[in-house]
Figure 1: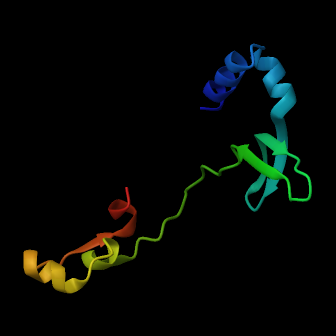
Figure 2: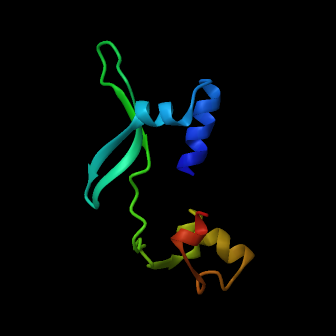
Length: 101
C-alpha cells in the first residue's frame, strides 16, 4: 500500500518515486519500536503544525478485546426496541469488532 501511495504522489507531482521517498521518508519511535514512515508536516502561523504519517503500525499479533456485549449495546439501540422485533435478541451477543465493520 505504501508503494501505491508513493506512485500516486509521484504521478500527481510529476516526479519520480525516489524523489517522493527522499522528501517524505522518516522514522518515528512508537511503543512497538522504530518504524520507517512517510511523514508530512505543514507549518502554520500562530498554530501547532499539522502532522500526519503513513505507516508505523505493528502487524505482530494485534490483540483485540473479544468481550461479548448484548446486541443492543453493539448497535446503540434501546433494549425495548429489540424486544419488539426479536424477543430473543437479548439472549444473543455479538462482538463489537464485527458489529462496527
